[in-house]
Every structure is written in structure tokens, then in C-alpha cells.
Image (cartoon, rainbow, N blue to C red; front, side, top):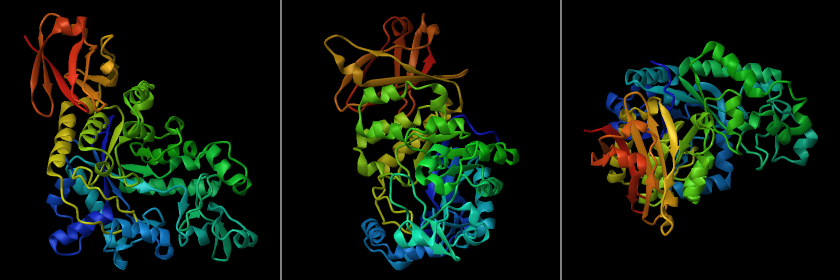
Amino acid sequence: MTAWPEHPVIYEINTLVWLGELSTRYGHPMTLGEVPAPAWDEVALRGVDAVWLMGVWERSPAGLEIALRDESLQASFRAALPDLRPQDVAGSPYCVRDYVVDASLGGPPGLAEARAQLAARGVRLILDHVPNHVAPDHPWLTERPDCLIQGTPDDLARDPGAFLEAGGRVFARGRDPYFAPWPDVVQLNAFSPELRTAAVDTLAAIGDQADGVRCDMAMLLMTDVFAKTWGTRAGPAPAEDFWPYVVPRVRERHPDLLFVAEAYWDLEWALQHQGFDHCYDKRLYDRLLHEGADSVRGHLRADLGYQRGLVRFLENHDEPRAAATLSPERERVAAVTIATLPGATLWHEGQFEGRRVRPPVFLARRPDEPVDTQLQSFYRELIAAVGSSGMRAGGEWQLLDCTGWPDNPSHENLIAWSWTNDSSRQLIVVNLSEQPAQGRVRLPWSDLRGGTHHLTELMSGTTYDRDGDELLDLGLYVELAGLGRHLLAVLPGS
């Protein structure tokens, strides 16, 4: 396998649900080691660099019991799956009993076969790590209790929702500083030297089995955040933050392991500087869904180094389905935006097919939904076209100026950018309003003068011939319908 591309394309799969549906399709129980070649071909899509098999680790029986007693969780399960059966609730993949591939999924041999099948198709494997908490029956509660935040019997009596007893000790339930504790997990102590050593060993073991790791709620382990959440219970803060301690030591064993952070609260830049290759860009997600072109444009003016370290997405297992949230036209223009920006991109299994129900991660089954074949074709063509264009393999990305006329401010709804490398040039223009927009886009290529140039739509093949002198002197004239887009290859002509 070659080195990771600079702007990787990641495809997330809910492993347990996916295997269940394959089992139904093929008529027998399916593990990772038994997935037929055609099924791997379906997920190793052209233009995809990595598959994130979400939820492969051993789930907690104790956590499952808690989930089955939680009425609010049960209500969410029934809302997503009206014909819910007891066997449909498998427990949370983020309530980890042990970092061993669950036997029901095929165990370590099954995962090794899955990784080999993906590698044979030129696709890498990403797995989860949950650094903030473990299941209440995780071995560390008895074998390494100093890895966890502990409490007292008085704490448990005063606030049983925030503490639990296990193995004769009282431990704090996992949480972040803005919400009530999670009932099914126990809090790890980011300030504990023993935990830091254990985290290095755990991540290195994951690196033995995968090419990348997605770290759940990574910002919770940062010193400032952790101290705010736990105060004196955590003990004195170490001189070195958690991730700058952990990541370099893991990379001593796995230099090419890709680190991806689930990150919020505008801490992406800090986490990049603490060792992560890519961090979730939740801010762009919110701007695309709820704000206008000016807000998105401002976001894209950020430092390019910062942008290269982001993960752009329209949905994942924590966010609502895009098809249920956006109109078809807005979803398509947002997808073109996501697909062609610098940084990693994350796509969620079922997104391409237009699924509208986001099942809770506790479930092993999801409802049947019809496939939106037009949307599926659009996404597959988009990912393949962007991949074959070469823009995500490297090159120079640049945000471009759009201008208009005093009596027509509609150009303010246009955003344009370009990619330039040794062998290709691409121009992307999107209209993020529902109204038509006209404007001129200033192109960055000074050698356009003196000839005609072909601008070819990467997805449809439609070609526009334009005079190079006009392109440089006035800019490219663009007229787009509401929520329209251009995804163009710029080719020399006569």
C-alpha cells in the first residue's frame, strides 16, 4: 500500500448492520472473514481511499443491560425501528468491553481477512478508538483501576447517576462537561500516567490491525477540557497534554497510522497541533445546512494548512441523514462542495442510497428503505469523477473571487475555487442560494491568454469553449440556477 493521499476519501460502514444485511442477502450468517468479493467491491467504490468499519470491538454485556432498561433509549430504538425485536439491540459500539474484534463479527481472523480484501482493492482500513471511557465490565476496572476516575461511597450515595460501584470500588460514569453522565460507561483519567501507557499500547495494537484510527470525542482528553470536567478528582495535570504524549509514541511503532479526531467546540486547530492528521469540520457542516454563502466563504478563507487537516462531511452515524435534512438540490450542491474541498471527506453508508432513517448505534438492524437510484448514481459519479480528476491526490487549492454588477448582487451567493497540479486544472462554482445567480469568476491561471480553452463538466461531459483573453481580463461569466453547480476540468484548446 502506498502512502496515505493528502486528501483521503473515507467511507463509514456500520459493521454490525452491514453484516446482518449481507447475511439476509446470502441466506446464512456472515462474518467479516466470509464477506463475498462482490460485497467488498460494492464498498471499495472508485474514488474511495479508506473504509471505516465502525463498531468492530467487543461490546459490553453490562452496557447492553443498562441500555435495555433505559426508557429514553428504548423510545429512540422504536422510533427508528418500529418493529423492534429484543435481538435487534446489541449494545453500544462505544461501550467497549475489550479491544478485541467481537466474535460475532469473526474475531481477529475475520478482521484480518477484511483488511486484506480491502488492501487488494487499494483501500485502507480505519477502526475506532474510544479514549474517554470504557464499559463497566472492562478488565481495567479490576486490573488497572488507577486508569479511571474514582469516587467514594458517599459520592455514589449522593449521586448514583454520576457514579457506580464495580469490584468493590466506586467509579465515575463517563461524561463531557456539557451533559449529564452517560449511564453505560466509566470515565478514564486522562491525567493518569498508567492510562497514558495503556492508551499507547491500545492504539499500537489497533495499528497492528488497521491503517488508521478514528478517536471518539478526542477533545475530551485535552488538559483544559479534562480539568474543567473533573477538577481535583483527576489529580494534578501532567506537564504534557494527553495527545502529544500518546500520538508520537504510537507512531514510533506505526509511522503511517492515520489519526482522525472526532472534534467539536472549535478545537480542531489545537488537536491538529497535538498530532491529529484530520479533525471533524462540524462548523462547515452547520454552515452548509443552516447558513448562507457568505458564512461558508468566510470558513473557506481559513489557513490552508488548517483546512487540509479537516474532515468534511454531510452525515455520519451521529448526524441526521442528509436525505431527511436537505432538499435533493441542496444535498447535491453541498455534496459537490464537500467532495472538492481540501482535507479529508467522510461519507456514510446509506447516504448514497438516500436513506432517511439514522438508526441508533445500539441497533443491529435498520428498517428497509427504497433506494433513490438517481441520488445513488449522482454520488457514485461524483466520487469517481473527483477521484479520477486527480484533485484530491495533491496540488494547489485556491479560493477565487466572484464579482458582479451594481444592479445585480446575486454573485454574492456564488462561491468558487480551483485545483491546480502538474497535469490538470479544475474549477468548481456553487450557488448556495435557491435563487438564480450571475457573476464572473477570476481565474488564477495567467497562461490562459492567447487561445480558446475547453471547460468540461466532469460528471456530464458537457463542454464550454471560452476565449482565454476574456477569461483573464473579465473573468469567467457564470450563470447558475438556484442551488446549481459547476464541476469543471479546464483544458487547453486551440
